[in-house]
Image (cartoon, rainbow, N blue to C red):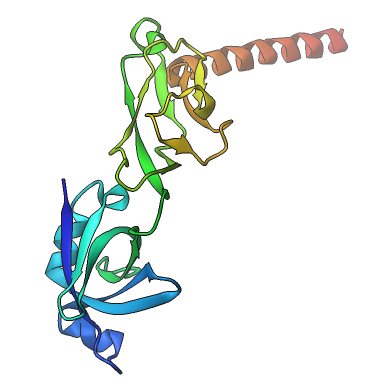
Amino acid sequence: MQLTVECKSRPDGSKPKALRREGLVPAVLYGHDGTNSLELVVDEKSVQQLLKDPNVSNSLIKVTVADGGWSGQTLLREVQMHPWRGYPYHLSFFSIASQATVQVDLPLHFIGEPVGVERDGGILETQVNEVAVECAPDNIPETIEIDVSALEMGGSMHLSEVTFPEGVAPVTDTDLLLVTIQAPRVAQTEDEGSATSEASKLLDALEEASED
């Protein structure tokens, strides 16, 4: 799905706080003209609507600068949020027009019922939820699907074991641990309790022997 947002040039000398009081969110566009950047403003309602999309961080966004004569495909590189009020107060867009490849963080989607869960009652524990990849701007997957159905109790999967779509390559350490199948916590607790009981019996026996 194509995401779009319309911006306007930020008035010279304007203060971010004053803009936010007017319902505008300061933004910047870079990558479109060497090291130059454009200071922009976006209507806050448009920003809120944009951020509702769960794939906004790895989707192409068409940015149009209504009064600046620029329009093109971008990636949303940064969203700064107010630390306690929770509303966005600055956006950074990166133009990909001149980029052969881009780096994006893609969410991981684990599919299948692991053997260690279905048969043995284990617990699927995910260690990471997204990975950084490099690909062409027009070849960005929404997610990376990972089949975990073959994992048994105690099993694990690392990034090196994942098959990526053609043209998509991870830029993260391939030794990265993604998921494990752990024994149920109740069973672990019982085992620990049993070990403690056995240790206690052994100490009692040693004390009795020393008294003799």
